[in-house]
Length: 214
Length: 222
Image (cartoon, rainbow over all chains, first blue to last red; front, top):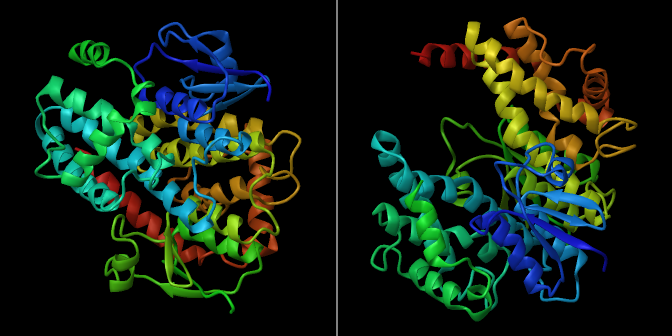
């Protein structure tokens, strides 16, 4: 199916991880290229001149940026593997809606709730609680956001499922507890213990070290 | 059974206008439900409990929210004429540019519009950088979508009427025809298109609304 390269970071980015998950789900062979964001390569600047960020997927010499856009691209091109988005248009719309919500509201709010201070932190904690409540309702009665199998929203929620609990622990800010969000808690455990997902997530120790310094 | 389409929107929302234009391009009949954003209806709160915003498209009673999600939904269900390209790479690029518009172009335009003096001067640089990318994208094309209006054109549709309105209010050129000849030409071509033109909200009401918004934001600056 052509040559596939993934410009990624040093293994810490949930955004790069999303693309890795999609590629591995579809069984796509690819060449990972580690980018040092402090010393951006000509390849990165060529294929993502707008944002100059990873991940960037280069397929047959053509680059695509923005993790969820890349995941949709992978789903469209590699039809043989398991579907990442549903086929039904309405389900697809719902899937895109939730992924957008995670990116635009959940990640920013929860990150700030853990990593900012003072008034900004308090405001972000409230926003996080509100946002997480919606996710809690959405996962009720489902094993994964994608149903029986991991799908687009589960991939988008990798930060919530894996990165967030680690950051929470390092910063001492508990957001998702079994008491407050029993369904999300259960999803987090299923997700992180899933054999497929487990094999793709970066090591907890490496992330702990990373976030201790932030 | 004929499809039942309803669109919850306000008279001026540029996000809702994306959907209005898309439905018109697809030749779809629908019912408009006008919302007052200061007094949100029970329907709006029921169909979009998460964001409580317009637009909301109801298709046979099922809600779809978020304008770009709605556009993709409409394109998935009603295939002709296509809004997004079929080629996977081109489709990905279309999504990229639409997201760039919402994440970067719109906020940087807004920053110039809601500031003054030194703050405004400083805000112009980032806007100019963003507009350069758009100018580049229009090389050799009539529209972002190629020969016909497509998804990216609709995503940037807000520029079609709003740029000149904002420019009038702040007495400052945001999209200079000399610096951005292709983008300027696109703004004119897009806003003059008969399908698009038929649905612009009244200009004088828009000027009034945005003047008030600018004053409100300027008052908030410490």
